[in-house]
View (cartoon, rainbow, N blue to C red):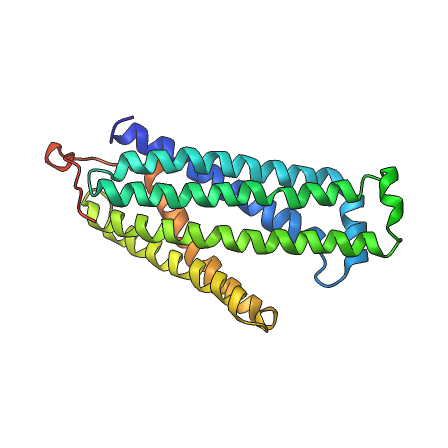
Length: 239
């Protein structure tokens, strides 16, 4: 891969798939099926829409695979700015993909608990829904852990975009703000015992900057690409 418009547009396509798949799986699927604090209603919703729940898992897998590819392409696009920082951003993004991939096991555990297998008869009728909600909550926590590494990756990426000279600096600012939102929300969920009372506010803090910043970057890659002068193609090793 080279630092050119074709590579940038491949990155834009991958980024668009990540945004669509991520929003679909997290907001359209899980938030429509999970009733916070109500294990019985949540279990009933998933049983009634098991196909949708499985499609949501597939959406997460597609998002994760595209994230791995995008980590490599962003490294290629931004190594002329700083090879070491571009590599750091890629590793943070790969760490996020690894965590989110392993975290999907929690959703498969939910499907196992709903499978009606004979060995599940040891659990009472009221215990299975509680276990299902437990694994869904564990998935939510795992997602927040993954977003810490994603926020760090986005922060380094924003800095590189700002310094690159072949992306508009405002895109770098947008990404830095979005990264700060992800980090604030994730650490708030870990540190605040009363986080649930402020969850809607934190969601707004994260979603709006992230949507604006990441969608702007995605559209720029798709529509404009990058144009790099030869003098800009010498990798910098500054950290």
